[in-house]
Image (cartoon, rainbow over all chains, first blue to last red; front, side, top):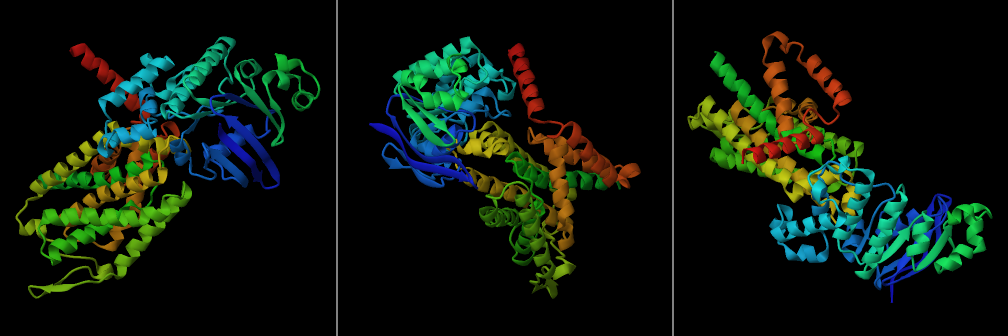
Length: 255
Length: 303
């Protein structure tokens, strides 16, 4: 069953067609790779799904419901969370607070009454946040300001925060950017764990070791259009893809 | 003379603290309002009318003034919170000037004991005598001001440790990211503007009864600009920040006779200097975080 369907989705900035008549279907439970050269419309696509940018035309359907043009907070409430290409955290808040304020899934909202949510939350909620920090390996940093974390720690916190909303669909915008090989391998493992936990993942990424290894299927964008879609092995061999990326040279594709 | 002078200065610091806290709350959610003096004014007039003309007791007059200011803030908030940055600032300034001009022509007087009482346009509103009629001394009134300030300050400190307070800071830092945490930023911002309106309103009501006389020109834009500057001097990391700003301005610059003539120069220079070296004030978020950390360590060490 498809969890996410984009139907002739377009986004035009003036004369520039950042995303152009894009059709995409993501099946429930898969890790779906979205790749393409810089400026090919990957991040714009993520922004359209999340409601950050208004859609020019086309449709975004999540779990059979049309969520096109919904405000971002309503897209999250529907079950879609994301991370950012450039890390975005609340630097003036502590690590713990960053996760605490992200406990906004429907179950969490129902669990506590109004006053509890707005003031200090319940003990159970506080324990949940600590567990999530433990899982992210950030428990000993809980009282640090998020701005003072190292780059890798910030990435982990961002992912933990996206998961705190208990999404059924997770959009990751270049989570491996700036990571060393060891960190990429750890991320690979974490994504597989999430997949087993039932989270569907759309992975926008440039780091090919990660994309080729972890994804079930891949779509390739170029100039806002989909130029290829298929299994990782097929995409690796696809001529149009190699052309788009490298002007014919396959070198860095395997790097 | 010095005792009365001291009581007056300390009372002024207390009253101005309310409008400083009001502007601070909006700075926390990332908006610069040049119009908090409008809510101060609405409450000053509203509570004065209630006590001097309708004969309400003073505590009810204060409550009424604060609620009226909150209602005015709600009216302002609904169309303006979707505006960002400069546009919000201009809208609040326009609103405040509109309120001031309305009070310039607002006349509503009744005869009490053979005398006309009530707002009389640009001549102002005299004889708001509730605290004198009920024999409250200047010193006692100062205690009332500080009692209410303590209540509001405790409210702010609770807010800062609460989720709502964290959400306000999040909006100030990155509204779009806040929205993507599943939070309706528009609703939270309206709430912040209304809360700020109520806080300014408490100050306005206290002011009207201490001064016994209000006139529209008191509520000009300079009052709002000062209110903003207090937070920017004292710091945006905690509600103590704007209070420090008020204490520096009124406690030092205005009250020490030798330098009071240069107040605006020193004050303006201080704001400019701090905006360069410490853009979020003396007690900014990082400083407050550091202090909290030391405090935790200290408590652990003593236990």
